[in-house]
Image (tube, rainbow, N blue to C red; front, side, top):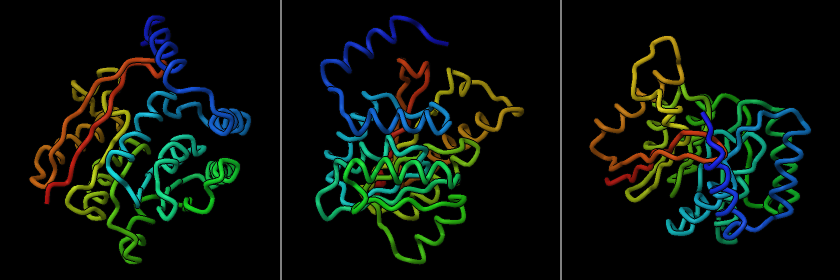
Length: 222
């Protein structure tokens, strides 16, 4: 479901507060040219992620789901010069496009894109003591959201911020649908967060160029 006014408001906000950026525009264009699905966050959402990372003072960021690297660029730009972002991408073709986009944005020195199923690469990060991460952004296959959040918690510290995208699903998250793994996975993630005493969380509905959706924000308390 979309609404023309949602687009108008997003365009108004973006024109005023998120000026055009050559590297980000090129990242979207090259992703589309490579046939990647056009499901990257909107520009104002990317700026929101960037501001969250800055407010968090993030030095280590974990992203689960790279796609073409658009959100990765936004997050990595919030890092200090010695900061590092690890992004996990299942599809090698997507990862190749993302690496090129990140290199053009001048961020190749602080971002690593790892390929493979995230549930295979996350245990490797733990073995390598890659964490704790200051911020984790989850934007991958929704069926595995509860597993991704559980791993984000394992790789966190008190004060880590965990952000999960696309949690409202055009409002469908409010009604059980056992035939849709994106709904069952998202609802299981909400239940995991609600029952995890180490997480303090809320979720916000959003409307805009990406339709009716939302995100969950959780802070690790202990």
